[in-house]
Image 1 (tube, rainbow, N blue to C red):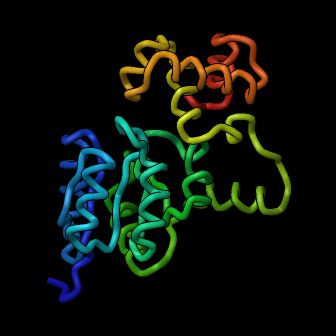
Image 2 (cartoon, helix red, strand yellow):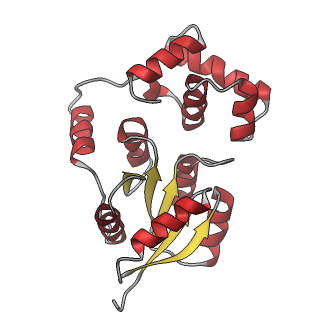
Length: 213
């Protein structure tokens, strides 16, 4: 066993997902999951009580989402490397996460070897970036391609947008994100304005065409 273990915090509201990641990381003798949280509040409490080298955070969680948690962790614990782990493809969240200070972005179907390598790289102060994401970053830095409409949305607006596009009602969206119906309605109005769309159907069409749902 390595004399210097990489201490990992898992943050995901699904216990099954946390268990799967824990088993994958358990194949490496230099990595140990020393803390688990089911939401952002629990994660923030844990980092006050324990020392971690890397946090693996889901994007979509009840209450404060993974990107908002990332922002707070970077402010409160700047030496803690944060890797985002999500079911969503890189096109939706990866650039946004890296801009906020993430050490990398992985999808939940990433092979064990990729996950282990990303954790080791993040613990060493590096960043895990896939070749496809690296190409996208190079395009953005070079001024090519421009910014997609949905990239102008805030983190919470993007969550609401995806749920609207998936056909969820405003009441159901409020239940999922722990928001009042009036707040969800306000977000919908902002989203339609920023996206240049006139209806939910147009939002759904955009989401389908851009691989968001």
